[in-house]
Image 1 (cartoon, rainbow, N blue to C red):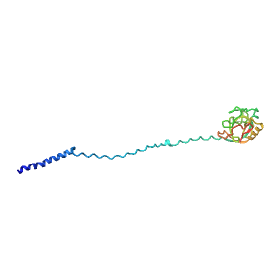
Image 2 (cartoon, rainbow, N blue to C red):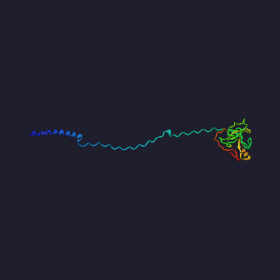
Image 3 (cartoon, rainbow, N blue to C red):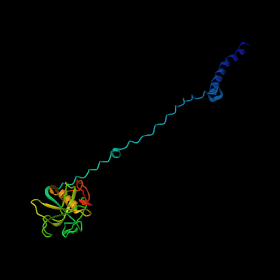
Length: 213
């Protein structure tokens, strides 16, 4: 009787051994407690936007343009000394006229004394034998006028002689004579002068007034 009761005791360990692996297998297939969720990655900090790039001008655009080179001044004329006198509307040949023999810029004696409009002067000699070539220009600093050779018949002196047209219309013969005397002298002159010299524009004698410095 004792042997019959001991049989179940011997079988129990074997049964337990078979059940335990089965439980382990079922737990691995998801029949047990749910698996822990994966860890949440930490939130990333948003990056601040980069400032816009500032364009750097190239040296070719930032450099100032070169300054223009001024043209060289015109060469000065030749300094000479001349004998200056004057003739007028009353003592011209013929008297009471502004006739000239060898006009260049003016059909009759005239001019304002500027570089563009010089005053007529007469030189010694006749139309075919003028002491200076017609069209020759001078600047006379004592009267502040440019003059141009357009007439002949002036007296001869030891120096080059320029007989300057003073006009004189509108004034008395006395006032005109006084004005011609005021400019008569041996004076410096500039032969073939450039433009730009100081000018007192207008006739030497007009309406009884002598317009000289």
